[in-house]
Image (cartoon, rainbow, N blue to C red):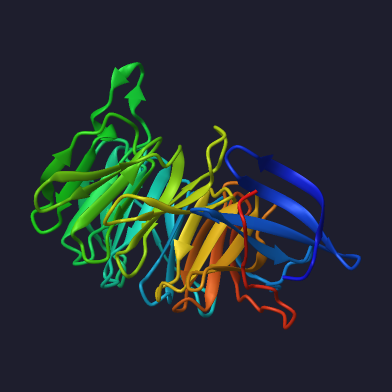
Length: 360
């Protein structure tokens, strides 16, 4: 990185050696920077004030969207608006079937890795399983007020959890994590939780389950052993890396905690902090790209070597949802003003190589 004068620092912790964000001036060219932290180092990822990833999105819907999910090949998209689930072709943007049956707002969607089954949860206290191909309702599970869903990699188990730790002042059983046997459509096991469950994720090999809110826990499923308790902050989202080595947790930073953290799965050690908050994020199918959202923008990151790629201005609303489509070639965002499909187009002057600095 060229010699730079820092003209404005938006957040700096001397004791914690944390640079949150800044404006860097180099030869009268103004650039913004975002920072990541790894032990004993700070990495600055610079970008221009205009988005490096410019794209004109394809607008699928202008309706408020509360959940989205894509098929493993990225060809099909499921979105929720109110009580209705809508299926889409990501390639053409055309509407497919509408799935009706829930009697209250749909809170979460998930698609099995074989692309055959769609799971939806709702405030009507049910989980519904649908055939993604035919739109047929396959089963209805009485699950309580569920707000997060995750399929196991083999598609035989569905995990459900809820943000509602208490309901009308009483303990709510739906705050527990429930593992459903999709063959019998019965509860396989229940994991007691002393907190709400904001997000769930299976490891790619299916051996681990992570769930969290103010803290994140990782369990070994075969033994039921709690492996790690991570100080993730009040998270919104989490995902395992494709190689099973990392767990990524994301927070919106409202309570002052760090935004996006990278944890070594084997040791439970925090190995990187990205000082950028997140309301949602997604990994591309090949595990090479990370899309993070907050405040109406989508930031794109390369995983190896870790570097910032650019920003998509996704919405004027916060609470943006994100997924990858078409095998990672497009980014799909959903929010209060609808669904957009983006095809990122990095510019040739992109600056995406992180620069390592000594601790502040």
